[in-house]
Amino acid sequence: MSSLSTPSHSPSRSVTGADVRLKVRLARLQLEAQSKQSEADRECNLQLEIRKMELEAEVQIRRLEKEEKIALAHVQRPSNGVSSAPVSPTSLAPQTDRFDVRKNISLVPPFRESEVDSYFSVFECIAITLKWPKEMWPLLLQCKLFGKAQEVVSALSLEDSLKYDCVKNAVLRAYELVPEAYRQKFRHHKKSTNKTYVEFAREKETLFDRWCSATKATDHDSLRELILVEEFKNSLPERMVVYINEQKVLSLSLAVVLADEFVLTHKTVFSTPQNENRSAESHPNSQPNRSPGVIRNSKEKEALLRLLRVVRRPMVFVCLFVQRPIRGSSAFI
Image (cartoon, rainbow, N blue to C red; front, side):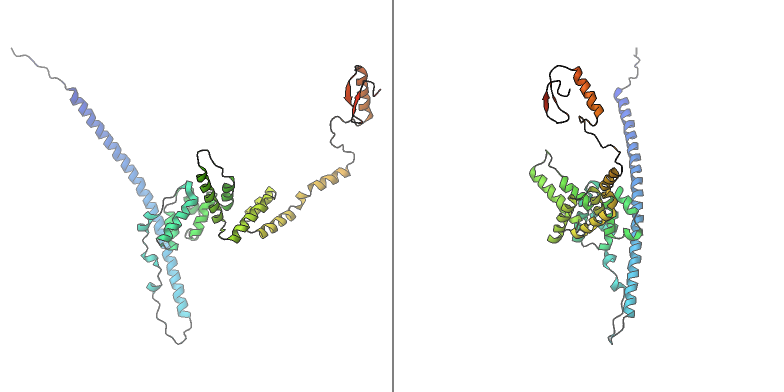
């Protein structure tokens, strides 16, 4: 008699099938995420390429205009009997033709919004070391900017966006990194508990160097003017200091002139106490502020005497008329 055998379902087989389906699902999700990331990267690269092409075209146009002006100047120059060699456009072409933006853009340091003040120093050091043409600095810089810096630079005109100094100053202003901000950071910087005095001294030194760099104090005379202007502003009213800071004063003589002009312009504001004295003299009936505890008329004196008659026990009190202690209750009766 043959025994009927029932088919047994292996649990390992079902578990293996579930694992395979899970792996397929994960692989599909990874492919979708990679495709989305690649689309975002392609769009970002496309925008950078478009911006790069626009700037390169503008630089090319400026170069051609410059070559045309130079060639025209050579043609119009009067000859002194010496035949000058013909000017070829290739000889006048700057070195920007041999400069590859795509190859050098990877050498530009990444931009960080928390280190804006030191970023430009690092960028300029790299650009000078690698001998990048100065007219290509704005193009290389703008390829790395983002956030608030990118918004500020995009708001500039096309002519200003091709000037490195304009781009640098616009970004520094956007992050409030002006000379006054550097000065306040240097003066108000305190040592924290988790830092050593060596680190604190180095931070102070760095802040002072940035303040001097922002005000272009590179020699003894400019540093002297910087300290004198600061000390002069410390003795002025706050409104006057704000006015002088708005004028971006770097010399003591100019700060003194602006302070005198401010006083003359706001002369009515400074003469307010005199006007108040004159108004008080013109209204003699107006009562001035009375100090407490001083008797002004006979009615108050009578009220005080009635109060003293009620209280008959001996006491020591201060006479409000002669301002000295008097013992007894019948001194005023």
